[in-house]
Image 1 (cartoon, rainbow over the protein chains, first blue to last red):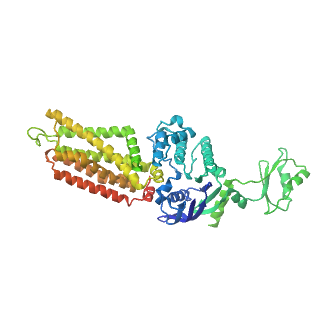
Image 2 (cartoon, each protein chain N blue to C red; image 1 turned 135 degrees about the horizontal axis):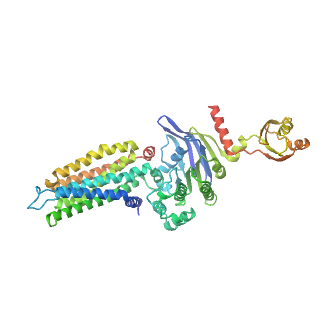
Image 3 (cartoon, rainbow over the protein chains, first blue to last red; image 1 turned 120 degrees about the vertical axis):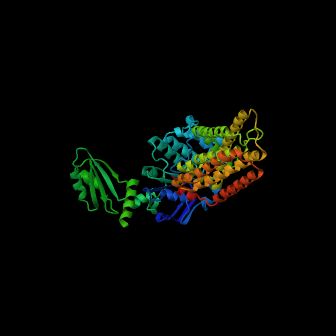
Length: 307
Length: 234
């Protein structure tokens, strides 16, 4: 559905996007991660046809959006700006876009989206009087007003309170799972990406430095190991000396009564019986699971070192 | 309703809902109508009746241009500073449709304000003459056919410039183009307006010039790109 091949964008001497290739399929939620200036927004603008590639292609359904206004009818967009007019009411804003997209059952669609986003009671108020969260919700309603098959979202929940963030997240998940909409999401929020994306690309200095499912990225970069939580009365040093006696243990790390043990690659020593035999009471033992943040930072730092 | 008309309708609604802008524009139109109306002299009178032809000829264009300049900023420039144009460019509307819709909206509102000023001037003249003074044929032709095209041409060119130029350049444009143009029209209207006889030739020449500018504006839109607009956002 979205196919980006060897996409490059140069602004004078600045290389904003450097030879990116991506393929995103129907019903997939694809996240684009990266620091500020990594090239996320430029990539999105290139896909939307707002910018011309210096080289390479960015196609949606096999065609560039810039030259195909009829294809843009099937694409929903929420950029950093919500695309709303402050002097018009929430209802009039949606009505305007509904007319632009020539939605047949315009009034019902606008009403149902206002209800869905909880803005029904403020429908006649000017958008200028809305809070940031309300505008973002209305912006999201605007972006899905015309039943798009592809939705591109740039930082959809940036600056929103947790309640609205959850609402935005649930809406995105619902659109992807129920409506089979392809969602391309730019975000800084690693927690959000981890919760909703099937696949992610990590961008750095305009290049894709990693692109895979979160599960694959996690297994590729994770170090095998366990986290052991000791009983409150236990001496962590005693437990540490027992664990260190295992040859297959690479290293250990103690913090607040927790011992994080990293095994040598491919090894998985049975620590629990040894600890119990040594008379150490263990409250909990679990396999280490690295967060997306850990993976992201590791990939970014690894790339920095290689430079 | 075509996409152009959808855009035009929205822009008109937004302009009318902006009370401050509309009241200021209406106030300016009325002030100029009164100044010009009271400034009419007996010099250009025919049989003791003050001739309004020259004054109406200049006033209608000058006020139309002034209103168009002020409202174009609200419709084109503001959409760039608010960055809403970026979202609009991802919609099914083409750049030409967006431009045309906005031109139609600003031209319509500016023209109506200019017509209000013309009506006020005629009322003042009627009071001073103790009877209605109707303008001549070329001036009626000018007011109803030439002025709207002239306004549309001005809005068209100004709109293209505002879409294409960066924020600083746009502010400079106001000083470089608009102030001399407005001052020129004002000066001409006030100094020779009342004593100039407006002929069919004058009206036809201005109409031809207005059409030429409008065609030029429509032609320049071809060279406007979404990239240019997006990279010049504030």
